[in-house]
Amino acid sequence: MQRAFFRNAFQDKSQNSLSEYQLDFYIQGEREVLCQYLGVETLDEELEYTIKQYSYGCLGHTVEWILGKNN
Image 1: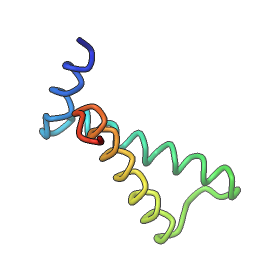
Image 2: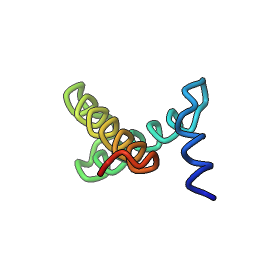
Image 3: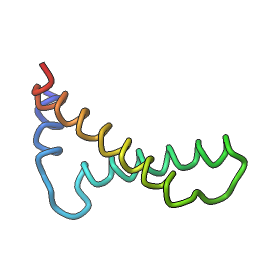
């Protein structure tokens, strides 16, 4: 039952969707961890790009898993 809910939620592409929230969650989490690890408050453009690339991959993999497309 929960899987059906998340299938529907991840298929919604409107503003403030679960996918948008999840992507922001991944990006912010990785940014915080990396800033703490490096001892800095902001990251350069290349690291920001890398974080976004990684986060989009995580989101895509999560959506594939929820939708049953990662077999």
